[in-house]
Amino acid sequence: MLAGGVLIASWSGTRTVIEWLTRKNVLDHPNDRSNHSEPTPRGGGLAILAAVLPALIVVHFSIPDPSNAIITLVVLTALLGLVSWIDDTKNLNPVIRLVAQISAVLLALLLSSISPIPALLFLPSLLQVTIIVLGWVWFINLFNFMDGIDGIAAVETISISAGVVLIGTLQGEPDAALILPGLILIAGSLGFLIWNVTPAKIFLGDVGSVTLGFLLGWLLLTVAAKGFFVAAIILPLFFIVDATWTLLRRITQREKIWDAHSQHFYQRAVKRGLSHGRVTFAVFVLNALLITLAIASIKQPLPAFFLALFFVVGFIVYLKKVSLTKGRPLFRKPPVDRDPGP
Image 1 (tube, rainbow, N blue to C red):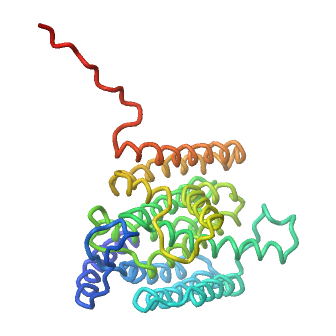
Image 2 (cartoon, rainbow, N blue to C red):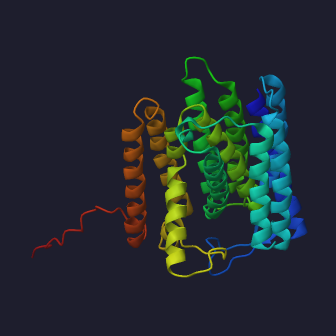
Image 3 (cartoon, rainbow, N blue to C red):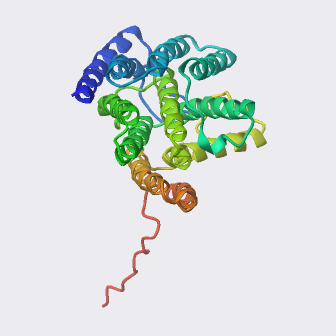
């Protein structure tokens, strides 16, 4: 019932936000780095937050939450969304954005008492916190970086959240702390996705991609804290590998890593001829496989992880090769030159 309300609120709210952003001229105009050709409203994350955050407050009152973690998360997400919305309209200095993200992560860790991650307990406490902070902040940014074509960020949110819901459901006793937030994020993203499929009528903007990265980072940390560390890595593995690989390549080429670009593997595939819809659907199929492997990792963590990494790297190679054929199948046989005869 709650998820259904979030879906309706997100869908109708996005339609309203499209009209409002268009009147306010908050548009993403095409340039040489863009993957779209028409001015498009930017800021659809406002509708998702308006639907998701109140629902999370309902979850807080529905399940035991003595540390007030969910309320803390809602407040910090709203504040981070405000900073990101200002960035969408005013183009904030990258340092200000980074400080806001680090502050939100540190406050979340300090105020919500996230449980220790069993896989990191062999490390000194300070090093554990440092790894979590850096990992969470990097995840926020990589999620923002990967929001570059129609539908991909919403599909990724739905996929990760669906994996979390299944992990929470398949335990001996269903875990509401995973299931309910996961269902809410699925519903909020699906309502937005209806308007974001190709050709997109609206983009998330930083107010959407940064806050979704923050919320998903928290959800994945919760999964890891419950003992499913490898599953928490597998679910977003394509985004992690593509974004990290691209960042390292740009660093080695001495580029300004904070500047906008379109060098991610999925973006280069679109530039070379694949449609937004085809790439996003391919990511969805890969994510379905990653969800299966994440569940398998509960019993067989290392084999599941290396198999997931194999499929992700293979998918990236596929994107590189298939895009060079401008969307034609990779292994189609060349046409036979038949002699028509006399």
